[in-house]
Image 1 (spheres, rainbow, N blue to C red):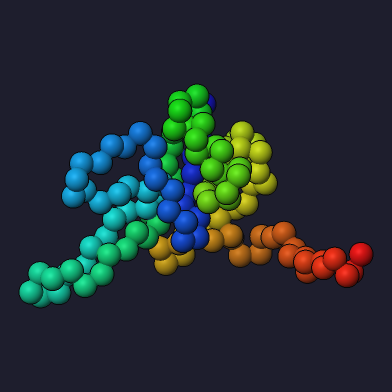
Image 2: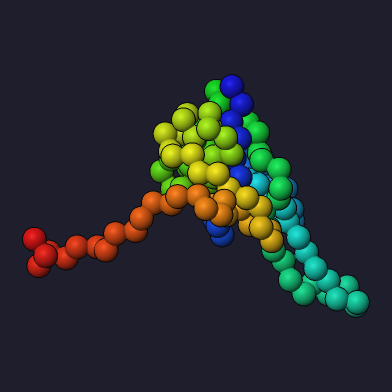
Length: 122
């Protein structure tokens, strides 16, 4: 089975199985490495915006198992489909791409935040 993931928020999850050589930029799940330069060729900014395609990986590989754990434990990735969400044990949230970021689809019901209780509240 193939799992599908999107980048979530500002979290950077390293791409599993990639061995970098000195000087190469790190690679992240669902992100591209972007370097902007001025007219003189000097670097003005470096960013890792989300890409529009989901990362697809086999569920039974070491990398697939690692990303399943990261999605479940850290909520650092969006499950791109219902099957992936079920394997990861998370609620499937429909997301949409908006200006370099994956966000919950407009009108999608989100989990209501609750006010933390203090010890004095009982």
